[in-house]
Amino acid sequence: MKYLNFFTQDYKQKNTIKLSDGTNFVFILEYSDQNMGWYFGIEYGDTKVYNIRLCTISNILSKWKNIFKFGISCVTDDYSEPWLLQDLENGRVMLYLLEGDEINEI
Image (tube, rainbow, N blue to C red; front, side, top):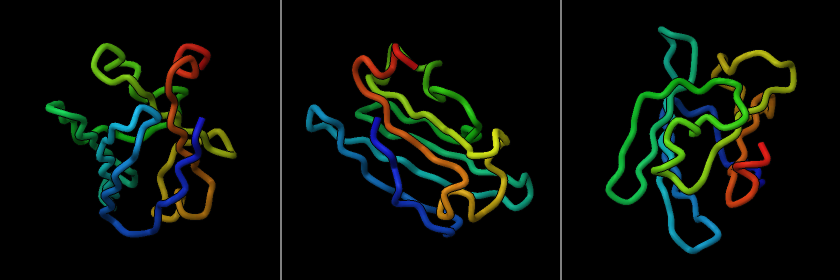
């Protein structure tokens, strides 16, 4: 698992993440004041998914396991959901990139 620790308190963030096989995907993250939560999107090759609510789960991409060869785990230090703007920057919410056997182990 690779800890993704490049997040800030910016309402909109866009990061390119490199996978171990050398390919990349774009991770788009947006905070909604109205819904008090984070939403994300992924652009990987020709596949694009958007507006997925970030929630505490072992692999938030398991629904797309036949499309994405990677996963993302969302963990909180207090077992609650990510709902504050500063949650990712201050480390209360941690995102991990899952690849290979890690996906099945989780």
